[in-house]
Image (tube, rainbow, N blue to C red; front, side, top):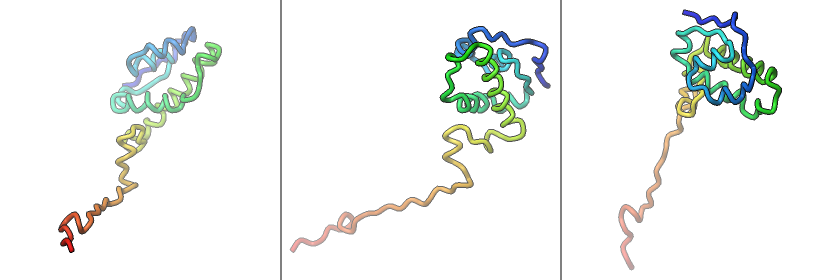
Length: 125
């Protein structure tokens, strides 16, 4: 099932402040007027929002005019969502735990060093 918000215009008033107060992925999509497939959102909601945050990192939406900030936020959310439309959260590896356990980067074997005198004390002379 797809959620279409194309017929609803975005209210850009204080968009940066309003985005900070949102609590669900659906709220972000509704506020910014981005169309989404519920099946994609059900699987990747946190990953999409995390990716959106990565894309917005360093941008100061509060310093932009409302129309520009709203357009920027909408474009970034649509871009983050598109990353997961044709790919899985496991393939995208947004979160640290997934990045650290990448099967393409095997963990080097750990070696332990124990000094010989710790195993068997040397005889005193």
